[in-house]
Picture 1 (cartoon, helix red, strand yellow):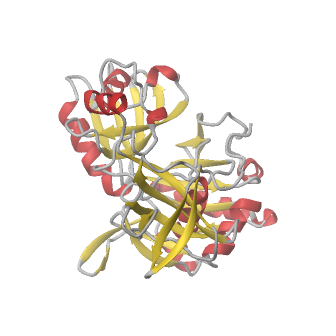
Picture 2 (tube, helix red, strand yellow):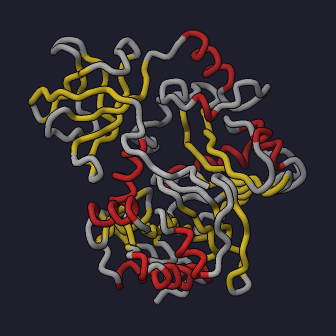
Length: 380
């Protein structure tokens, strides 16, 4: 078994070297099916995507999302430096709080990555980028850091466990970890002499927590969470269920719904931009676009029939008027119908019916405003 003290050996698929989570052997023992994600060999599913999805919506599930990046910015003025580079305004929050933010390209305003910032204090900010973008975000921050501010890449040093669902408090309380703090806040707890960050965050739309834990204690935590959650019907969940859950919430996925060619205005992520801040990467570009109006917008799609949308399917009003394309699409286990996200021209109304080309058939979909389901993510 991997004890978590050292990075596990990389796997190779199709000639590419894949990183492994500290929990890789735990997943293999549970019979997980693995898939490549962001350069990591991660569990796609265990008992099945729908069953795992429903466990989170009705009770509780646990995900290994250790592929997520971990970058620490520290030193005098660290928080101010982060605030001058990333889009959101750290002055809106205080120490012990988390914030969704964007790393924008300074020249184009495109979304290099979407990130969670954990503001420990003015001299210590933890950033959690997406797996495939961790190196690029680190490169940009390190190159821009002023004297005295250190940017440290801890991608392989920590595991991340996401305990999500209405019984997540019960599970963590049995493990002995602090629970009940407000949404988008975090606290630190001692686990076998190691500091574990307990965050009231997640990517499912349900009440839940994310544990950022040193490698050495991650396998032990995983075992304890599964044991504590047994009476509540906890299931280990893979990235397949994570995708259906986040799509039901309308949460964008970098590399599909957002990316370097998509601006926060187009993605309707203006709420994650500190428009009144004097400085952040890409500020002038996205501010000018905001005043002029974006050409595209990210919208939700819901099937009126039985069709299921998939990425890159074209969207039109009539055969010769192309509006855009599907960016994410799936079968919603909660609604039992096809749903998705799409980038379309701003000329189309937010409640319009559109045609999606599903394998040569024109299927009717309704444009809607996500989320597609009611959830309890913000409940205290």
